[in-house]
Length: 102
Image (cartoon, rainbow, N blue to C red; front, top):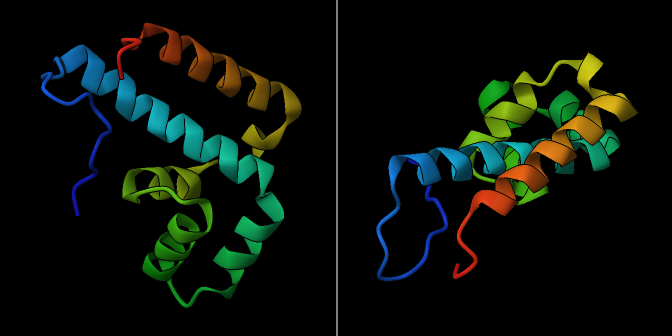
């Protein structure tokens, strides 16, 4: 299922904005997963296979396939506080680049 990106009504997104929104969705999913890592790990451990884990993580975190894939691909070394801060800073930077009218 293709990822549906949030957008403004009656306005067409350019390629840069689409890319920014996709990156932001991934970062938001990763940050949510870091905040709920125990639940995420339990969901993955309890899953029969990768597809089930991806669906379960997506439902748990309220993210789409793009975000849940990013979570499953997350390296454990990225769970440190400094890495989380880097992700949060990048997410804030991306949000500041998006139009305010959305």
